[in-house]
Length: 437
Ligand SMILES: [Zn+2]
Image (cartoon, rainbow, N blue to C red; front, side, top):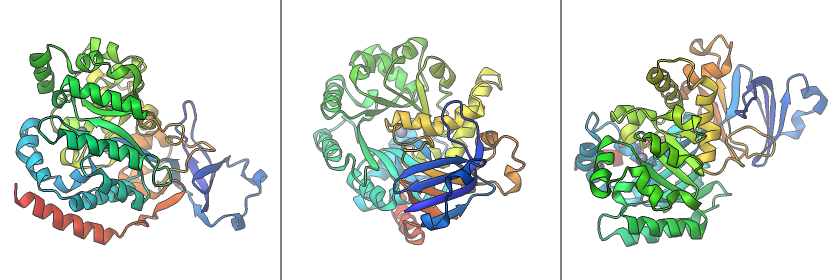
């Protein structure tokens, strides 16, 4: 499909770029032109050359948001067990509920999550869960881009089966769905992965040349467990096992990191997904985002599963991330608007190791573009559009969502899924699951 987006406020999210008015052209799955308003006439674009023309007057055109840490089927488990401590919430509520979920529940739960993501401008997400074949099928059908990971915990006799599924996911789905799906290996966390098993996963990642997605330093309790078990911090534990030597690593959370931990992460390939809404809601603490960035470590943005975060609106995450750093340092100049939005786009793409294809608007990159409607009181006047993105825009202001050159939401209408059916399936399945917990 050939799409011509006209008269937009274009924000590329490339370093040093400033917003400009102009047009974007898309052919097939790629961006073919970014034209400044004053130059558009030189290129003699005409409507006959395109299948679709979108008048984006009063709209921002920007790269789609990238959610760097998700557990998409947990959408079915949101808002039934809040305001509990993380370990109580996990052990008494999430694990029993997850044990009741079938592969079909996971398919529909992840689809409901994708409906919410597309509606709020997320075009790509990094997912870690079970029954990944069903999630991959849902990604293929909805048209989103995703980096999929089979979560690996080594706590019972099912560990070997999980490993088989992890390898199967990588072999079967990497670069599938027109290249929209990539894969990673997903050892869950330092406290659920003993040294020998973790070393084995690192070897697999090296053998298949895939990144590793792992939780790290989410709570104080985790730090205490690792101190008691190994007399190490969770980061030291991973570092000494050689996690950071060869593979590209996506670390989720990184809330509890001391100065030596940050030093150990300096120079790593990949980086940290900051998940501020989930961290705040579970009372985990404030991640040292500014310090990580000052040490050259890439920090992207994620929501974590809706079970903890409750919302998948990445604009809520952008606001929360910047507010938290300003509060923590008592300094409004830290984590400025542009960087906060870049965390949710280009920096998250770097974490997923797909920044050569997406994460910013650039001719030749994949056409993952969202349009944001500013013709509303809460986002007017437009003095500085990036400030509006960071501090005022909400997910519901997203007007159109395009992934890989395909329109997934057109003027707030979902195109690639039957939203009523997804809602009906999601509601009925969620009710059955939580009734037994
Ligand atoms: Zn998580």
